[in-house]
Length: 234
Image (cartoon, rainbow, N blue to C red):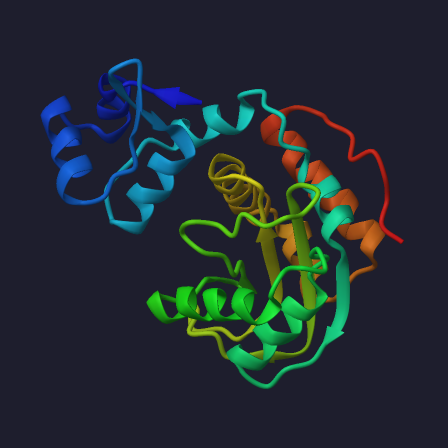
């Protein structure tokens, strides 16, 4: 979902000149198309939340409802896998175990993937609260994979992650994407479904994969309309 400068200004509650200043001075993502600047709705929402700028919640809701080629989260989890009893005693060792489980192509350097995720964590924890983290990078890893995927790792023991609420993390969602727009859309969708109390409870008690997939699909259906994952976890 692309926005003009005027539309972005309306969602941010500022004038167009302020939006242009943020693009120039504060790294607000914008893309040139036919000699005009356009902003991706999910990129705009993420930038605003990261920079403490008020933004209309309707912006992300509209972006998530906008049709695109990104599969539903349940299908992405089928592609990436759900893993139980993942070991680790600190953030680094847990990330190493997560990377080891990512379904990546044989030619992908997993040590490089790990180093990029660690660098992102050094900038600020991806622990979003409630015992959940979404390790990712600002400019996503565009890897030689078959497509977007989300890998869920349920930890053997909760691990300190410097999360926003100070709680240790027991569930991690690792996102691998073939492009920046898809990556940001997946992050936006995860942010919405992880507000669902039934899903977060299932993650906390390490529910079976079928139940987790069902709750993810149900939660996402509330904001995007019904969709079918097309397959189930094994």
